[in-house]
Length: 248
Image 1 (tube, one colour):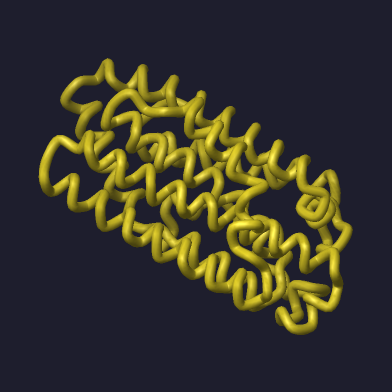
Image 2 (image 1 turned 90 degrees about the vertical axis):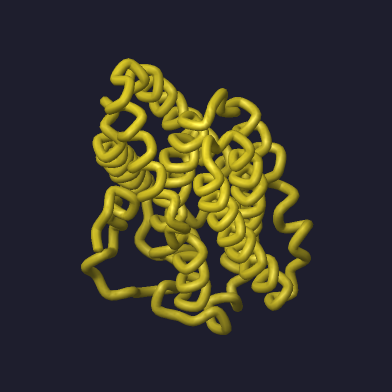
């Protein structure tokens, strides 16, 4: 079912897969540059999932009720399971997981430092808005991956239940105290800017990923398409803001 959390449409939704996207890992990984790009991608995703686990576990301390704490703990567990799948896949393709994650640790840690929530509601909005922007970005990239890697990436991007939970809690809080909406809208706009900047910085710093995006080892991506990709991500963000009852 279509939700604001999966509203972004990738460029090839209605197209047949071609090039690398039509191959499996065994065939696609014969190209060294593509192999390096996938290791980078899985490393970034793995560290992101590990960070999400840590953050949700920490956010549970701010939860106002036992039920809310339990819900966040369940989501944290799902994120850790995603991390394990990515770590195991890296090992399976003879990549050292810690080495694959290390190049992305500083940027992700800085993003979380810059966007530390001050309360429960800001934490919910961050998980819903910030994580969804990252997921949209990775889904766009997944459309250009070999079939085995694409299935893994899309699988670990599955919603852990945070979308519906966050929307319900935030909308209820705004209904109870309307002025909260203004503060959370400003917070969400800040998250949007920080998340996009972080994604662009990570790609710019990793040659293999930037080459994949602009059409080197990946099929059918060019600079104009990168611009359209970020437009789609921005449009999906606007839909999520509306779902929360916030102005984009």
